[in-house]
Image (cartoon, rainbow, N blue to C red):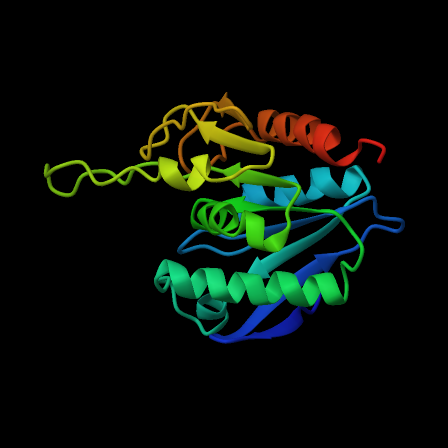
Length: 208
């Protein structure tokens, strides 16, 4: 992976790995999961598909990961850092391009919560963590369906059929594709690539 672009945010520096297209028709900005990085196999697969479609890709490492921490901060801090990164990209490397934002798991939640503020034309969710499993046989924890429902632009959710966080339902602007595997989405990268490629082509390749 090439040397990242460093973007200062209110919560410390973020790292952005930009993979430019020669004549981009748009861009895809993706965030990582809570304890992982931008090298996860589903993110790499998605980035490859986007580049094949002529889209520039930006993989964003949140400041807490850059600082070497595995546990993420609270949602407002994640969202603030993400918005700072997307704003910097819009003013510089991705200026004038339509954006799809997204990510895996926690990164997908951030993209959903900030979709309106970033001006995204679509949101791509890999393994959206719909409902955290109950702890030690206790009561189920609250669903996060409201974060998905609040997104007003076209949304794709690619979810493993055995994901322990559950299966989000489709919605008016939301397509849900179930593929073999669990929350890691490693079992069928071909199906992941097919779903992402078809959706990106519909959302980003339309003539203005």
